[in-house]
Image (cartoon, rainbow over all chains, first blue to last red; front, top):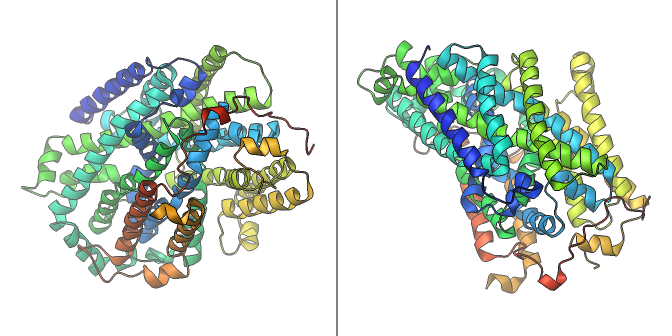
Length: 504
Length: 95
């Protein structure tokens, strides 16, 4: 063990998470609605942490300080999109929850497919959702692997396998309740550790946050405004990043489907309103990123672990940080927080991917008739399958940068936005419009991604402004949806009424 | 009373507010309003304070809208209005 104290903390935490997740799953009815949506009984505490901890992933902990070091204030785009990204769910969430409860929907694709009376939409959304989860899951495994490597000296693959064996166990045995209650634990851990480390480290080396930024203003001013160091982020690029993220944020299927878990429609709105308090936990990570800039830290995703070892290479005698570092507690805290972040998103992704695959693709699109009990059993099996698939991909793609992987995933969920908006608020949106719009949007994203990697020079000429691929493809999607809907027959008034689209 | 104005009107006002706020976070408004180091608040650069200010402001606006029950505050339909039949997945109307 390279960090024995941290190892004790990490393995102790894994044991507690396992017990908590399994015990939480012993409550509830045990059917598929319970496994996927917790019998629609989540209260305010669970909803708050589920929404917050699910979204704040290993990417947030590893990627935030990394991005500050590499691109400076470009990182503030996370605050920018986070401040409005969840807002669509404030307006739509109550309606989604009401309709979901009335007709028994537990996934996003089920809901949208039913509105458009289309198995194609359900199946395509299901497949696309699972495809978007996989790179995101790889990021979480990478985070877990990095922590276990630092703490135990094991390989990243072995570390990720150990952590995700625990995650798979409590997701299979605990369902969404297991995910929810472990998220409460993980959310509290993240908040406490990140604020403690984020305030004590700048205090030890610069006398506080003001001293830290005095240093940055004097020596690294380019890190404080756009376009950032080496002029990497143009206004156009920043705008494109923010808008794409705003549009796609609330459309992540594993987040959207949490609307179905809330005890009431109003609670969905309260969770959205409370969400920005969780967003503020990124602030100490920004301070840590600027600390790394000032002290010459690395520009890759090891920056947080570099900070955990600061007292070794940048001694700060007499400080709290030095004391924590000398006793191995700084590394223990950071490892604990990264692991919590990785697991709190990884469990929701595994649970979501398996639920979506079975409910939307297997049952919804392929039309397999399965009992409630059989569906739950198959979902449990697919949790294991997707965990193994993610781990295999991590073995192949573990060396890819964290942030780019996430941006790659973002092109898919944003394709669901036109269908959700049109489905909820436009009586004229038709089945053919939804099917063709979604198909064209996803196909455009796939073609553009392939082109970007196969022939970067040609892609650069075709998209000289560097507009995000998700942005281009969602524009195609919305245009096709509207144009086709205008020319095709809409659903019956009775059907529209079930989605609260009454005659005007 | 806020509800005196009607939920639909408040929903439109709220949507307009969030569109304007989003515009303030991107080009061309953000470079003018937020992309500066000075003035610094609590030592933090203005570029950071600006986005944190928007986060805080939006939280208060959302909590206000929630408390005032002006955006889709219906909890559920009356029991007699609830239709437990699930809508057909594959329709025939426009096929």
